[in-house]
Amino acid sequence: MDVAPRTVTVARLQQAITLGLQLAAAGWAAWCWPRAPGVAAAGVLLLLGGHALFLGAECVAMAWVNRHDPAPRARLGQVLRAWAVESVTSPRVFCWQQPFRSRAVPDLLPDDGSAAGRQGVVLVHGLACNRGFWNPWLRVLRAQGRPCVAVDLEPPFAPIDAYVATIDAAVVRMAAATGRPPVLVGHSMGGLAIRAWLRAAGDDRRVARIVTLGSPHQGTWLGRFGRRGNGVQMRCGSDWLCALAASESPQRRALFVCWYSNCDNIVFPASVATLEGADNRFADGVPHVALAFDRRVRAAVLDLLR
Image 1 (cartoon, rainbow, N blue to C red):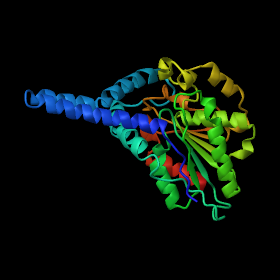
Image 2: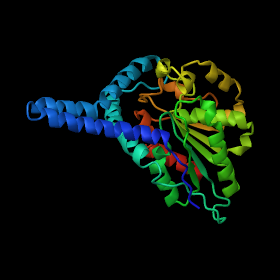
Image 3: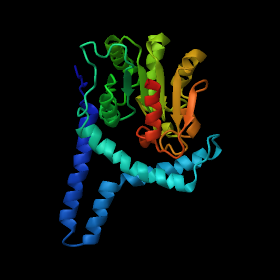
């Protein structure tokens, strides 16, 4: 039986933002074009492409903060390319996949026994995202006949521990279908939510492996701008992160594969996405959202499943 969890909050919010920007751009163009075509075109570009300015500011901050990080420093060309890639990837995710296609690719959890003995995967998204984030992964996993579940973490700005029950339910369903502990894959905040779940579960045997992609394991410089819920928890050196780290044994850390990048424009300085004692893997020049869709990274994760 294919099961797709319900999702409303993030999808509807991003639908409103996307449609609002499009209507604003159309209205501006209709009003200004007869009088000043150049002003009309500039306004439309700003409304529909203004996100690139924010991403550019993040990349500047990232490059500056990474100056003293032990990870290899990104070259100027890499930073510019990362900015361009993220400027294309982010609208595809936040203005299409998540608001309008969050249920387009259902989970694969057969109830006829055909999944027994197979290695299942639970996918956990990051902040301000939903299961639509994982659509490209779900298509690949379904094509392979791989049991897979993508969760929705709602509400989007709650404390991270509020997501433990959602992840636990997905793990229980997957283990029941396959008879094996699943591999968990988390992007960004999703990696922290998985760690919080494992702390609450108290049993490392419930998971086969954990892969994190650009997760702020030690916080992120941008966390200083967080004012509530999970944003405050992701500040560098937050009490929540320190308590989480103190709860983990070396054996638990050995379950983790942590991907990090010197061009991650959200989680920086780069090394905060690593965990001591984990299998930390460096993705050179890949920005934050695109890290989840990098072919080399996805291929390495799929190899773990085999």
